[in-house]
Length: 107
Image (tube, rainbow, N blue to C red; front, side):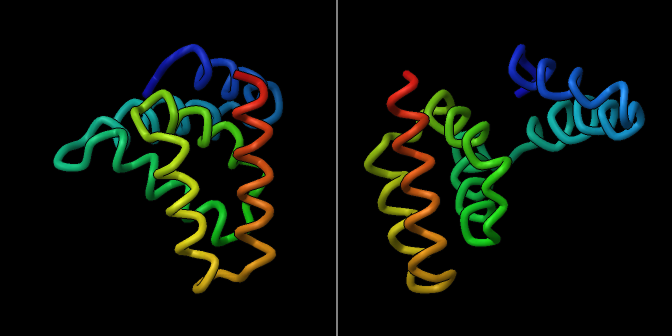
């Protein structure tokens, strides 16, 4: 998953937290996201649902975009967020769906 979007996101952090930016780029996206046996598609599904469930909305649009690039469909993402509404809360899921709408409108 180490691509231009990841580089852009980590470059913005370098001035403030260079070690954090390096770990994000090299370890998280350069290693963890590349490991088998889960595909990047599966990792995207897990990541998006965790971010929505934990209400980490600041990061969710980046990962929703990556999820679509990694092969998840809009319908699959909607179904996953709808499913976690029963576990993470209705307002949390509504927020995640609103961010998905924003990402889809930007495409």
